[in-house]
Length: 301
Ligand code: Q46
Ligand code: ZN
Image (tube, rainbow, N blue to C red; front, side):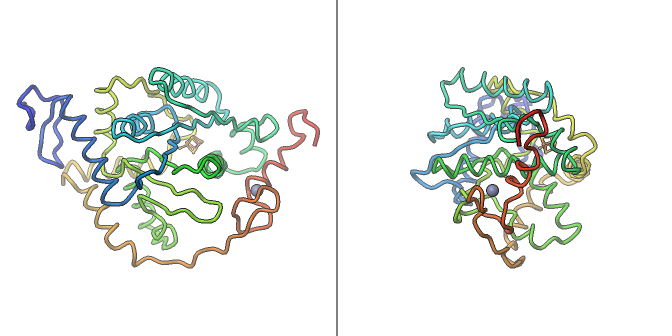
């Protein structure tokens, strides 16, 4: 199998694009896909400074790498969730990546905000699934860091992630979620803009990119992701893609064309009485949880 771009030995075949590529040309191909997403969906404007939320996994480290390659001055943010050894090992991967490239990495620890408690303890305290607490806490800390730093928040969501989310939302016709699923969400009072430059790249392409660039990412998944519905949807979509190459891309891009048809009234937001970030209630969920956690680990209330 020969590379379609240069004729050397190919390392990957991309049926959805009907091409085979060698390592060097795969990197160039991914750079072009990211550039195309940035241009077509206006993900980053000239002069904007990205802040990449990194988990230590292939997608977030690769998007950080790609933004640097494309000339953006991008910093990183790692959130230590307090999920045992998994969090320590993923922090290590993020630190190694940043140090090797001389990039600025900010580390936030969930325990520092919640009286020493991490996500598993907070989930028990609030009697909610860990992922629901984790999602809320991460969204809050990512937005706070980007907003206060005047940055655009970048996440490493790839095409497979977006398709799985979209599929779940379509199954239940969740209009509000559909209207808000976009490659870039604009800034609003108290909210930093958020963008996803990898929306045109599949999980498989990103794994091949990370390996070809020698990115030392963490392979281990979060222990709470086992059995997640999104993984089941990804599996279904891989079967669909096998039968009909390009199905993921068509599903996602065609959705973006009709997204304007989905509308839901924006919730009325007001500043949280404690932290000032936007919320629908007097105290935001983050501050409410922080107050509940006070005094739970030997700390004074
Ligand atoms: S939400 Fe859930 Fe993830 Fe948080 S607890 Fe782990 S699996 S890390 S994207
Ligand atoms: Zn608050």
